[in-house]
Image 1 (cartoon, rainbow, N blue to C red):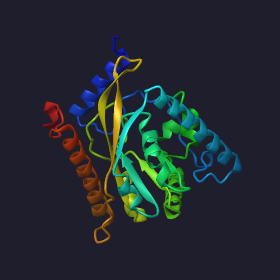
Image 2: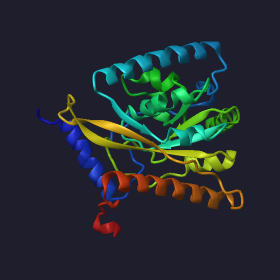
Image 3: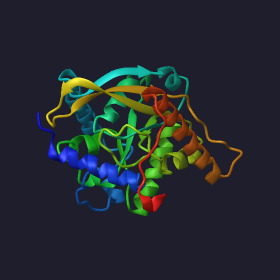
Image 4: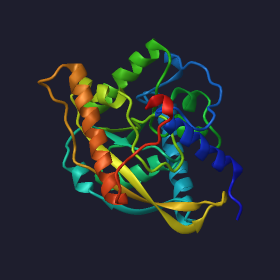
Length: 280
C-alpha cells in the first residue's frame, strides 16, 4: 500500500521542528479559533445540562475507542507499573508524551480500574475546545476536559478549577511537551505548565511514558499500527524547601530524566536529537 502523502509530510515537519528545537509546536495545521471567555466554560460541570452531556460524551468516546481497539486501530499491548499510580493517595497530576489522538484513551484505560469513583481530567489547548477537530468535537468539549485560554480571566477560572479537582482527589492528565507529534517515539523537552500547577497545589506528579513497536497491522495510511506499552513511573513530589521557580524546574527535570531512562532502556539506544547548524 502506498503511504499517505499527508502523513509523510507530517514526518518531514517533525524532522524540521526537531532540527530547530521547536519542541512545543504542533505538527498539524491548527484550525482557526476564538478566545475562550469565562462564561463559555463550566470547568466543574456545575450545570445539570453539562453533567448530562459529559455522561453521554464519555459513553460515546468509550464506544468509539473500544471499536478502534477491536479493529486493531489502537493496540494497547502492555501496562507496566500500575502500582506506582495506586501508591499515591489523593489528587495527582499525570504527565504523558503526546503522539496520537488515542494516547489519552490509552492512559484512561490503564488507570480506570484503579480510580474508584474518580475521573481522568484532560488539559487541552484552547482551539481544541472552541473549534475542535472533526470528528472529536463532542469528546473535546465534554469528556472531562480542561481547556486552556488566551484570556487571563478564563485562566483564573481554570486555575481555581484545577485546585478544586486536585483537592477532591481527582487525576489530571497534562501533556508537558504541548504539541502532538504523530508517532514520535522520543521524549521531548517540556513546557512549565504541569510543574507549575504541581508546585502551586503541592501535588505529586506520576509520569507516564508510552513506548511503541510496529504491529503487523497496516493502517489506512500505509503505516504500521503501533503497539503501545505504557510505563507508569514512580511519583515525583514538589520540593517545599526550594523557591517556586526552582521547585518547578526540579520537577520538570526529574520528569524528563525519568522519561529518557525508559526510552533508552526500552529502545536500547542513547537519546539524541537532530539539530540544525544554527542551533549547534
